[in-house]
Image (cartoon, rainbow, N blue to C red; front, side, top):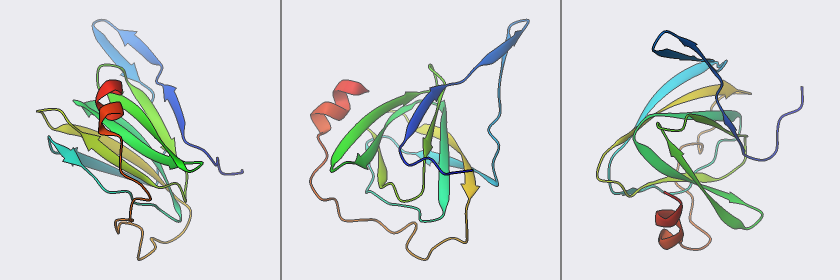
Length: 137
């Protein structure tokens, strides 16, 4: 199976049982719970042998993705459940300009061992557009 080369965003489907919604879980090799504090502007980082599958379970944030020499700003919220799939080699970061923390689940797919530089911040090629990030949030 070939790896995807660009970030994908898709809505989750659910089945209603009474007053409960049951969402389809994401297959993964490892599941990571991430807490993004309020007023956070995270640096870019990249994974060499890992696909991230992100789902916000509390709050909201803006995912910043560097593709084709430009930033894409993707708003994610627990109120509108979506999974964002980030393939290996795509620089990405997070912005939470809200007053509340954001909690997300990362259902990680491993394609090899963790590289020593995977979680090291990258130098941004140009500043984030925080006006645009606020507008999409």
